[in-house]
Image 1 (spheres, helix red, strand yellow):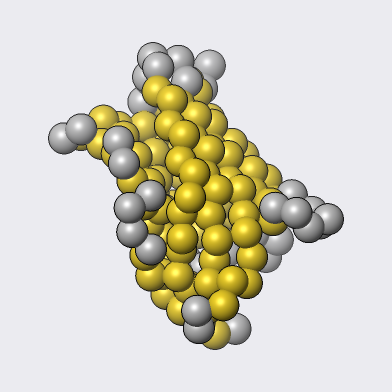
Image 2 (tube, one colour; image 1 turned 60 degrees about the vertical axis):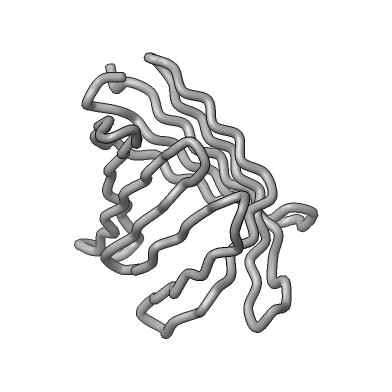
Length: 139
């Protein structure tokens, strides 16, 4: 994989009609100590507001770190329910992430990740979601 990459992230709530959330951005790719790192910036509708993102991919875990308009570290792990403190300008949510499907495919030209997970708050499921991540060389 080259250093300069294109990232496409599509997320939606399973079983519910609604809008898909799609983010496409240019970013940087690095492979360090057995982990794949993808860094990119996400812009908002507000001028000058940016969230810096890092996706860490290891064989059994995906970690998404957001800093900026939204601040959180979300860990997707098939073996453990994880906790994320999701901070936005309007307040914060303490979320449990219960990952039940994780498919990771990595080649020289493409990285794909498929995640299915439930978000819980106070031990109640608030949504079941799917996130698809695709990373390929920026040509």
